Length: 161
Image (cartoon, rainbow, N blue to C red; front, top):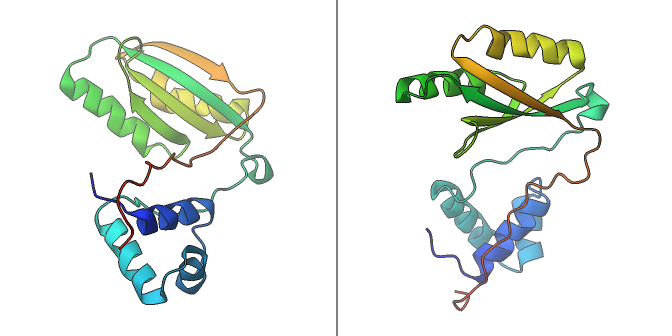
């Protein structure tokens, strides 16, 4: 873990709200100089605290209105077989999230597709063609009540520098 002070936490909070802010606007929002802001954001990026900056898109407005959560159980769980399935899952564009979990199923996938025919095509590519997939349990979303990628930041314990 990296030591984060009050300025770092304010920067992270502001970036979680709007990562499109210019350095000038971000510095003003956090009450630091633009040079300090740029230096600190660069440090947070290099340290891996900020993984990447993205735009969150509306699946409904882009024709990708079917969300599903899949529980996948493999027949054999050797390390190379788990790695092989994981590699295929993460390479699939419709897979938004891939979690290797325990206990229970081996993987939980969050997928986003246009409709049921697109979901069927995905299952053919990713699941049906894999002889090691033993069981698939699918949960289809009927309503997205919340989608928030924001992380709760740790409480600040040191003085700002």
